[in-house]
Length: 183
Image 1 (cartoon, rainbow, N blue to C red):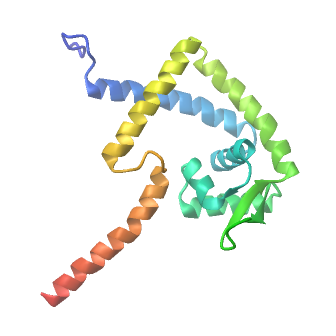
Image 2 (image 1 turned 180 degrees about the vertical axis):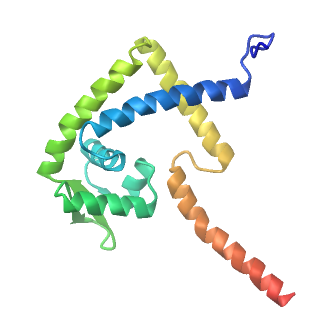
């Protein structure tokens, strides 16, 4: 049975399956590359975000690297315990703190990031530079559309959106219980 329709346009399920398979193997290479640096995936992501952006509030780091509030707090605590990051006072918001790389953190993530970038460049080198740019453009377009269709803001992270949805579910559940008790 041929899965290619007569008009030459692949079925959406076929597109999803091809993306899933490609993503699986690219992720395997990425995870192996990061593991070879001696860092875990979350720690690598946090350190790399700080390397390229500078000090950030914990919640902003979490949304950038797709970690929930609990996971990002654990990652920052672990990295702080290892002397790779430090918490600093926020210059304008006394309630918040910023997370910054230490010299040891910079020394750890710079070569790890460069080695990982080299490995990922090897993997995507099967695509011409123009194809790589087009792939990035198309994946961003698809990703933003999928986020909107899911009810998430493309400017925010899925983890942040899930966290924001939890209190709403709690209020709704309480309202349903109160209605059931009153009725």
